[in-house]
Length: 352
Image (cartoon, rainbow, N blue to C red; front, side, top):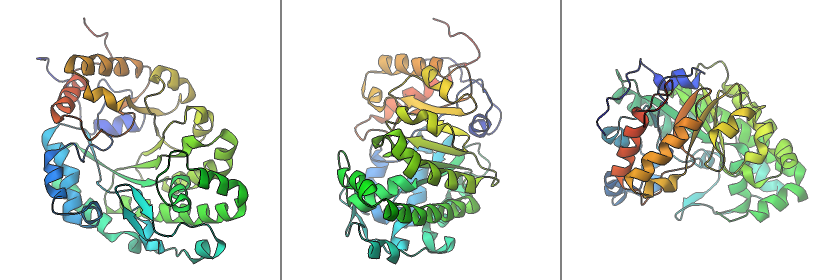
């Protein structure tokens, strides 16, 4: 491809996140820093995942790695949604996904959870943010901080480890609703303190990951998800950063998600953006290329990427994947994707 990328003014990502229908869709990718990059794997040979997350210099380095390869419009801090939980007294390990040594299912366990002050939650995260912002000084690239939504954090804490259907947690919500609400209240306050700390350290946008919201029917989400997400997102209001909400496999919840106080809704690949737009007429949409497309040949990547870009017209759009980069993705395929997005003018009909 020989076309010249569309020129933009500074902070294209922030302009789109605040609701501007920009001529080019800004671009970043969930899990853009990670296992598909050989430079990441080189660090992983000498440090565990948890060590990388908890060592500010390593977390900053991994955050910056994809920016050295690709002209992305935003970086997302290298961390994990489980990061703030040890400060509550929860033992978390990764094998390779998160494992909670003692799942929380009793009143005594949940009452024993402490609520640390913001500065105690994960000070290494704040330091990593400061290091990344220092490196990005003078550039248009925005740094995104993130955390897990209370319902998703509770899913791991009660289930204890990854699961196909998280049936133990879903049963817990029915069997112990009062206890579930107590847990969610504590997680809401922890998440709010953690995310405010990230903004104070320099994060310029915040994404709330509700990875397992889609497991639930609308009434269950209305009871155990919506009010706590609202409290977190409302608590971030007035801090001067756009708020992004992601729920995976949750198209049946879109009418409820539309009630949340956020600027950006990130959607997975299961519905076209032009179908989703009607649920969120006052939001920026983020997404939503199927990550598996990046395993296909370049011509297919270009075709499917343009399909997403065309579907994203009609309102503000931030280009992303519908979920994270798959670890077997060739880096050169990501480079091709970035080139296609940068050369697509959303204000003009695309030439053949």
